[in-house]
Length: 318
Image (cartoon, rainbow, N blue to C red):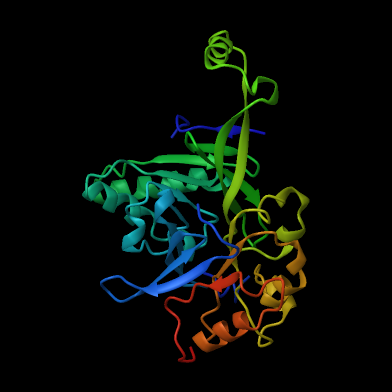
């Protein structure tokens, strides 16, 4: 498996219309911030963001210092040092230059942006166009990552790209916690002996990687049955799209647009080993009541561990 490190060089609806926590499934929503907006906690992680199909998707995990996709660059994404782009549809990547420019304006360190390798050259040219237009530096570290490749975020955290199935090239990301565990044969040895072995170059630990958060971006349900994606379904938290939630759009139509229908998630319910699942990217055709009603009606084993990101939705029919 290829691995990259931090020293590497530097709209829907047609997408719809065109072509560290404890507890089992722990999800809580409270109104505690100054703007009286809902705050969501999943498995003790605060999760922020907005995701409306064809409009904007940006999912933020502040405690991990990262965001998935950038949408139109919501303010609360700017402080995240790491950004993972799933694909190049405008509602997922449109705010990228503003994200980098705003960080520069506030004299924040250049962010690390991970994109599918197949779009890296185009993203570089996008930044060059903006540099020519406004004479700004737009400093950043741009990393192209292929499916199966890994990138080290910090000593105890890494990310790996996984295959997704959309109408244009796309990929999801799994964030892993990484720790070193003393090998069985060295357990019980006194400290000085372990230190001596380590000094001699002996490998005394095994690397343990635990899938913590997985993010799909836009995709058909095929990623669920892809055997190479087993860690996606084992991650503590899975953030996945569910663009359509009722029979106003068929599964076949959802697939034509490169998206997932909630009924497919129900059909594959037994495959999800995640403690919590956050559904995102609902069609703007759906009302808030429709989304909440569909999620609340989910049967076991999904009931109680699936939540929906509904910021920006209301009960007015679009």
